[in-house]
Length: 47
Image (cartoon, rainbow, N blue to C red; front, side, top):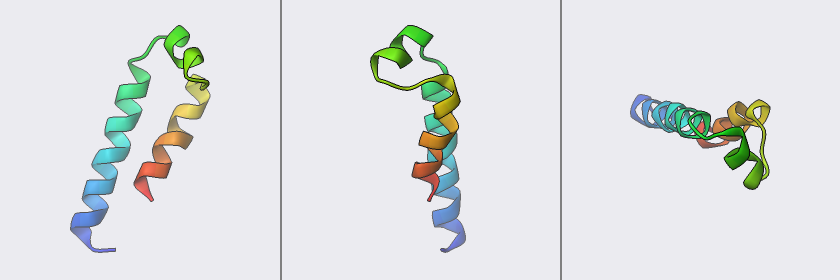
């Protein structure tokens, strides 16, 4: 991976964590995830 692609992936990871982290527990439950799952889900966008 080149440095630009790594940086873009990291930005997507952080954005995903922030977006999901801003949701209420009820909203997260509605989409079938917990707060514990957020980083795991976001890491998929980092790869």
